[in-house]
Image (cartoon, rainbow, N blue to C red; front, side, top):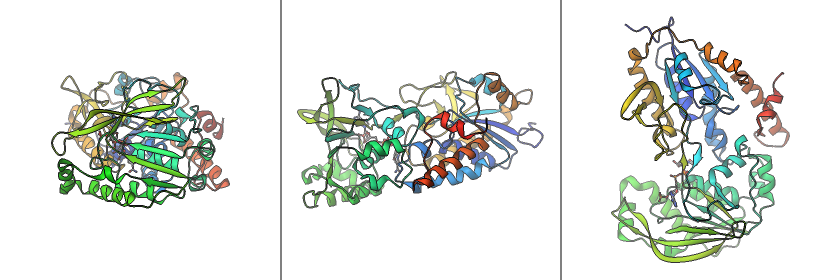
Length: 458
Ligand code: NAP
């Protein structure tokens, strides 16, 4: 009988990624009643994934999830190994030789492309880059966003698109006391953008953003939301979608859109135009983005499954900066099966599969398991399911000699990797909080690894 999970032979799990999915998986493992040790590997020096670098700076309540993660991290059975890229600094087979199980919770690090001509012109960006930049993510600090044109366009109508619109629309005073990166605040304060187009390929009954986020757009100091009442006239199939009891949240968004459409003409300095049934056909510019050709769409298909089809009617909008916000995508890890079409690690109930066969000892949770959907809390249920699968496999994870977790640290040391432990992170965290306090912000993030290392004793 297996003794894995007993104090003599604790279940040793390597969790890859320190965002919500990684921490909720750790929480579930620690709550299993077994003796469990978790080593959490993180590519960046700072933990907390998209809660730190994805959640909008003006949504501090959502960041409170970090308090839960901090508690989990204080367990003596937990180790944080920051600044370690799995697949580069240490391989997956090496991890497998050190741990009973490896659980990938590394999220969806990149974005999807529109696939239209001109997409790579300067001035055309992924929303994920802009979000990383204003949130102080070290990968995006050297990007430049030119906000000197009066028109910006955001493609897609999910909550990320909504975040981008709001950050473009807010005044410096509305952002000054958030944890937005200082360099971003500086650029946004000089922004000349007056008109922001939030463009959906389908209609107001198919928006993906949620109504509280949409409502927020109506309460900004210097921006009016603009909706054409004519765009809210629904065909029977969309009416049927909104009448569906399971679609109440979208109905609420529709009601907010109606309230926006009924407003008097805009008077504020900026306008956010929420437009529907349009898709970018081509991005045009001489050396940089200057115009966008938009194709008008019609909706086709059954209620609940309607798709956007081009009508052939094209319009041109002058536009100097565009953000595509059409979904995140997972990135393959060397040595781990990957479904390139969906951008996820193929799995069955959280067990990694390769060509249909389960790969023993490899698990997955969060966006890299199911794709980029849901709110932070969705990852808790998702991680519990994965951990349940892992625990059900316990007997099969008992393979030969007991793993030695210190072997992983030794390998990293040999390779000269400067591992950031949780104690190191706590010092960096305290320094960020102090820097924030000095300028009236909840925190001033370090945006480069070296700045973080400089906080630590040599
Ligand atoms: P999302 O909610 O899936 O929205 C993606 C949007 O892109 C949809 O409007 C989609 O339209 C559109 N789209 C996809 N492909 C397109 C194409 N080729 N051309 C034009 N439009 C296209 O994704 P997201 O905004 O990246 O958000 C990811 C997840 O994070 C979501 O679950 C979101 O709720 C969550 N999130 C939550 C918050 C919050 O709670 N405040 C903040 C940020 C993100 P179709 O519907 O037609 O496909």
